[in-house]
Length: 522
Ligand code: CA
Image 1 (spheres, rainbow, N blue to C red):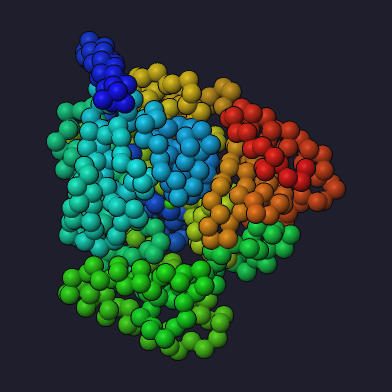
Image 2 (cartoon, rainbow, N blue to C red; image 1 turned 120 degrees about the vertical axis):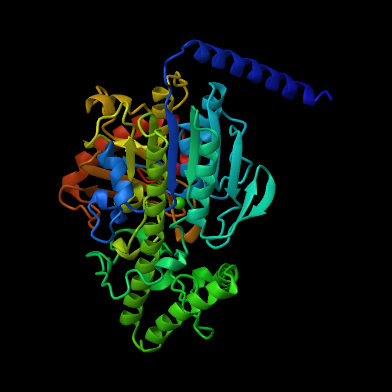
């Protein structure tokens, strides 16, 4: 009993606090607080969003959010991997402060979060879809989440702690469940986190799109055959299209005799588990399509052709998944129109980070290089945000929590490390807005190296410190693709020193004490 007492007291105080703040808002009759729908995909590269100039795909519904609101042209993440990004969004704090540095860590749900604050201020709160933070969601009136990574077909869910399952394709199912919840709370104000699993690896498309992109040529990016010279962290990673995508798991080739890639020795079983979720009729449809791919595969006899084949298979399935995400974004926007909710609802579409579509020969994310450091971010709020804006300021996933609190008329806690984007969105600029970005990545899986760095627009300086010790500097005006590491070039010695000073200042500002491990070679 003694151990329970402080907990009970805390609950009582929280309840009292919620009542008080709700009462304050109830007294402000007539102030229409916005509803908020935060839609997040998993691993959606900005290169696969037409609003960002994609040549690969049309995403008319995601584009529509940006056209009727703002497109953040320079949206970035602070730590480019799934769970950490989610924790940053929930808390408005860097990974070293919210405690979740990598995918293997439980999120501490006892801490202050965006949904908790909104809920305490009278919002109905829910999360539907991918959670991926291991601990049970807190701060939500309603939660219905995928277990761990979830499944694409006929997916199981955990609804308020109980196992359940639904028929259909995961992106459609998540949207169905989200719209059902909104329908019950449309009087508002509500806050919904609608988190898609797609287009996460292994990119299993909806059956209706299995023939999309047939006969489409996907040119390899110009730096696909990057030789990783002067960049030891790239030399040791295991996320290449050429060597690390698995023929069965990733390319879906039903080849029982094919060798499994070293990094993916779990993949055949994982692939089998996924397709066994299909019904018999669905499975026949699936097999008929991928058997044709197998026929193509059997004609390949050289490694260069195999790489191109796997790249094509990767792009086809990845983009097919995104078509479905975009369709379902459209369903949400249509619902808001139909029910007269569009004007007073903030809709954000983003991804938990960017992704490589063959740049540097890679798939996946994690590095501070451009394609995974950036993330697509579009925001619409017709009542307050004027349409057709392109915001060029550096914005972060760290800014989402403070921005939404600001729009909801709730004070932003002083310990949140992001900033409200409201001034940028209202006036197009904000005095004192950040001119540089601090990044810190920790996870060692897939041959990755821990690194932190600073990005100034013109330059990017990174320090890879565990398990190797190496610095990289890029002059992005001359080298947009980050191929030429200038760290040891004497002409840049002064720039390196200046950037290091700014980097240390950022680490002090964000209270990231990297200790002796992080400094390494000066
Ligand atoms: Ca992700």
